[in-house]
Image 1 (cartoon, rainbow, N blue to C red):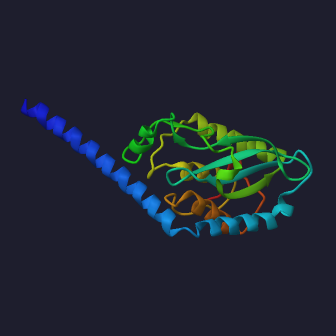
Image 2 (tube, rainbow, N blue to C red):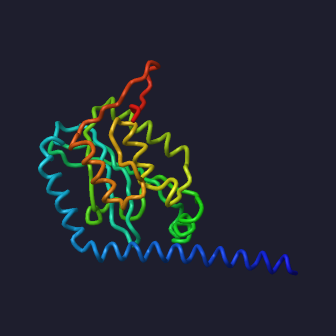
Image 3 (cartoon, rainbow, N blue to C red):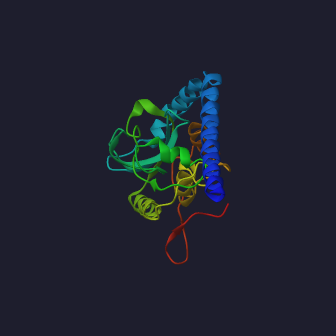
Length: 226
């Protein structure tokens, strides 16, 4: 009985600790949002910068692209990649989404994932396809050959089915793996808020809107060493 009571107490303690941690994270998020009332200014500036670069992104119909995005959510947001083809005006004609997030629609895996790794999904999540939720973006134009290499790499990442954890491997880390493969610089920390991560990545690449995929001697693609 004493052993059973000890295990029950241990489980209760773990549950309470996880709840406290999650509550603290949510409180921090809400505090950041409150103090960041002008955070939308940063998003508007990013949007303004993107609009200035639209001419560079526009190309003949059928050109390919990948856009690293962040969006708002009830928590601290989400980072993901959208990729596909552009029309003659540089607008998205077709698209796919890849992003790492806890599996299922329940918030429970998301909460547990702040303590231990949980099963993930790597497709679109709720809100990814809605422009009104976008908080930051960084688009890179690709040739057909580059697009084929990038999408092959994305499919490999998805097939690997990595576990999601808020600290060790999150949505920022998943997007960073795609960007690094393309020869892009990424923030040193994946613990930034999603819009901060995307804006920082765009700044690190100085507005570069073209990929730079490195070929190895074997003919396969690989990112350059940092």
